[in-house]
Length: 524
Image (cartoon, rainbow, N blue to C red):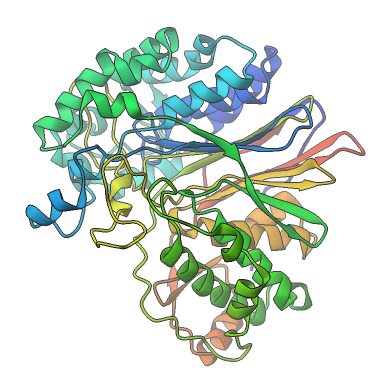
């Protein structure tokens, strides 16, 4: 049974799809004021950093894929580095064998603000300050908590209670914020106002930096002012692969987008279109491809400044064929124990403007409410992306000073005849590559429209357990069990997502926004 109850939206002069109503409406407002897709995406991201503090914030990271004026897509990697002092010897000497979710060591230098600034400097039309007005208003005057956000809040009470600054800001007289209650973060409003006027320098070399470093050092963090000065956004070509007559683009490592390219090439070899969208065969093959692609990723991918990676070999026909040869239609391949870190929260949004410039951007503080640590005076809640590092010598994702961890967040873009035809993303931590593949197969193999592709039931093979959404048919589950899968039903949804399809011939935009989140798509 599919999720239902939401239609595709249409537009010809612009479109935005986000996970929160306030962010979508602000993106459209920016487009109507003469801003382009870049301006609208940054403004929406800033709003989301206030209204979805469970999933994103300026204490986190950002990745984006952007295509402007018909030129090739560009990747922007705004993921954060570890403090320079955070080398493997420090952790071994201090008998720390795992970076805990609420540890100051889990806080990598937040990269989102630097990424937004870099993208805006390259492509923005409106003044940077203009893009923060709605976010500042929401933080200062307050906003009403939406349904999905309230549920995350309720599950995070203990985390929010541990840090004195977090407890003061993010709990309502000691209780979680509930649906429709008004939430304010005046300290964050003041910080956003400083950043809007002074730019990214305020976050990385200003009074905000001083407060962040002091707050983390008081808890045992190794962060220094110099670490923040060294944080940079990596602008690069995307990595891509052909799938039938389209080209799928992802951000290069330390992003995990290569997983999508591997999975899609395996799906093409397996001729996934020969099996029905809602069939046991489709879900079985998706699980098998997930296991093999994730194993390749975990063994080979990390920060390219610290390890050697042969991406060409990893994406080669021989690698794909070797993986596909391990797959049977009637039984499970024994992958062993991958021990993939748990998958956290994220937000994703996409904007396309009247000139069909497209922005696919994703922002995250990693786990729900990140590390649970808020700085003393800025209202900034920090991510815990550093928990994805391994404290294992010779592992490609072993922690080191100034190193970026293997990430989970991935924006996506699809081109045909060198033009963007789909700007899309699926949030949800480690699920994201599977979500990308699931949506891409839905659209390009099963001829679904964007909203239908996002609504469709999902499953995630994670650490040898096949986690099925409630919408997956029982007959499918029964067959999966016969094939050898250990299945469980999950009450929570797998991620969320947004997508905008670009029809150049008719000058039409078709968008969808996932029912699993609070937001919507809107066109003009």
